[in-house]
Amino acid sequence: MIIAAAQLTITAMIGRLLLILALTQVRGDTPDLHKNLGTCKWYNETLEPAYPCGAHGYALELGHHFCLRYEKLNDLLSPKGQQFVLKAKTCLQVELIKGLYDGISCDDLMTNAFATHVTCYSEDGYCDLGFRDIMAVFDIVGPILQYKFWSTIDTFAEIVGRCWFK
Image 1 (cartoon, rainbow, N blue to C red):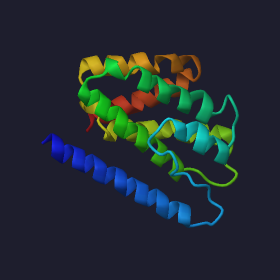
Image 2: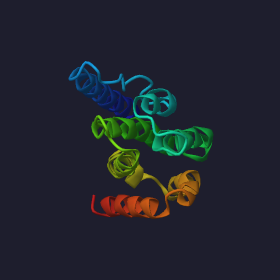
Image 3: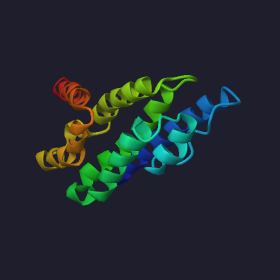
Image 4: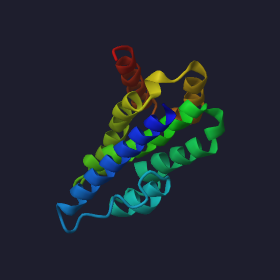
């Protein structure tokens, strides 16, 4: 069962990568947004150079920072929680890529990034996590409340809503 789940996860990731490759081939001047996909380096080495918003933009202040926090505090999570983080990390990046366009404002990029969390968390296993893992996720992302309080509250309310009606 674990092997089947891993194969399904790998198949989904390959599908997402192929979609990204197809999207980046549409226009010749489109940045190579699949470079570093699924890693924390994606935020500062791929997203930020392609869509620069600076030290207080999503890529550097939030995306990269909290991705590294998840990696640093990974041991707080059970194996199921760690699998959720692995899947959600790639999903967040893939879904954000889908919402990028030439001339996107930094505010719109931030809004789109928050919106990706609803889909990725609710579809990649957050709803199936145990209490310990949910508390660990709150421990990891809790500091975001000082940056974007209402956006964070709205996002988690929508995720919880999707979990209840799943």
